[in-house]
Length: 467
Image 1: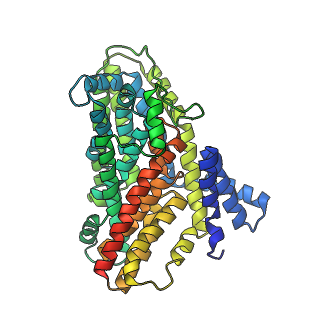
Image 2: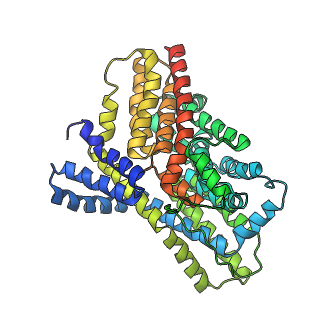
Image 3: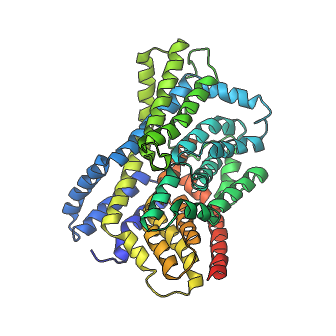
């Protein structure tokens, strides 16, 4: 089909319906169906049938299937750690120590955790959320703020510390564009990744000064009054633990599984990359890491004679079941991304740059275009793949430094991903914090927009300086 504005209508529909109806699953499904109707020349019945085939095709992708399995296993891991008393014992240690004995220190906990665990963004989010959520509840800090902190720490940190799947992926994209010394150029681009840097600094400012703006202020006031959620909200994940879990419980029931997951990730990247950690498979490595973590959690429980294997299986299945809405959302989000590719939505967005612009305007335009693509598709990695073939050749043709253009493409992808209600990392952040997804999107948006304005200003200044 021709590259025109109609190609982005399904994504826009999903975003608008998700924001105003709070029904994320129906919004994504509606976007998928509309996309296939458009691909079938407006034939509604054919479009609905093609939508089912498209969703099944999405599920058949090994990479997508690994992501969804990873999601179920994370639910199994979190619930197992909760039921074996690991989180309760760990939180008790933290709350009785000087490291988290004030609300400010409590707010800093997921931020510090996000910095320390920089291997993979979803792991960072889920671990940070699971650790900090009970402490946030204890000090009556809103779960929306927890979701904002983990969401605005994970991707920026992962992209600024490139010794992980993010770095390997982006270096590969840069290499595909014929850039010499791709690793070195990508490393230079980190200094220009203004959105990631701004997001981290704004988050840190919010943590230190308890800065609440827009909807976040109302969420904090509600929580201070003893109400964890709004009356009409739907938390992405149930967090009720069995109060009668078998004693004794130890902090190591949480620490050791998470440590095992953290240590397994680079080893798996090394093995799947045939000795080259930067060439490893991020999705496969993440799956291996969470499987090892679940096994460690089970072994600890069996050694402590808390539960037998039958009970652990029941707990694990309960945890996996609690993630079902999240898994469906991820599946439909991936399916929407696939149909957007078939509609050439990214190509249409990219074609907006085919007009002649002053060289000084190119850099901020790359950031804005990357943000629009990521917001419309809900994927930062997909945006990187679409933007690198645009940003790098544009820089080369204009005889401008390549590193700032790489940074603008990445910054735009992360910004749009943060602002989009159909983003997988935004959804995972809602799940990890056990908050309503749309509440998270609404409370995070003002902070993301502020960081976006800062980044756009700095890219504009840099564009003038290098032009």
